[in-house]
Length: 248
Image 1: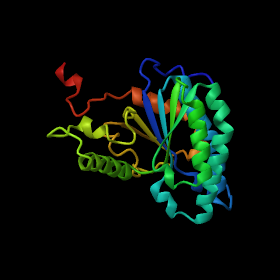
Image 2: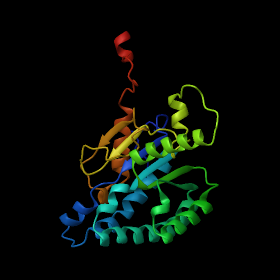
Image 3: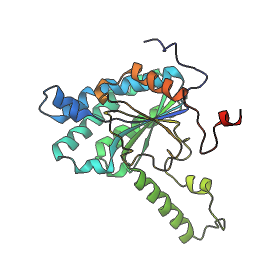
Image 4: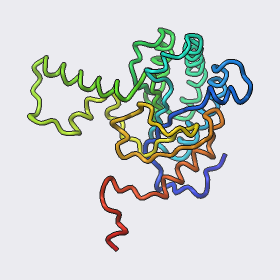
């Protein structure tokens, strides 16, 4: 699919984050008995997002794939998700290599099944020298986990006797986050129409532009991605300051 001619290719977000929501509702709407079937149909949406972002010139794409709260779902669904994750990573490795896309992860990966950890580690190793775009999978992740992890890293530095500045700056603390040195997202997309952040990148999205679409994740495609970017490009990002138009 061609790049939307309405896109300003000189104003593409450096980093886009996506909350992929609505797989279960999509499966229900389609009359499918198992929610996992919605997750299976969502693989094409992931391809559309990854390839669409790479084509547009996005440098980082973070996908909220599995939150720490998702362990509370039915065991059959969780296990199905983990198996699907293994299969998808294995199948998509060649495509990542072909498109010069680097794979990274964000979250407590140690809690995932061993097969998931192995497939993830192998693909990350194979793609580590790719440069066109970095795809980050947030797995067993939550924003509160990340901030707590940063606080624990700071505690460990203190206990080890490391010399620290008298007063920590925001930059000092940000450097302790597991996401460091990834830049903050300029655009956060959420599918399914839900008006929630869902414990995602809480520190990093302080001034991120939000785009909420009613489309359920399995129906997400490049066209919707382009509309989200076009919406982002129409906004004035003030970062808490006065609008430039008020000075005219």
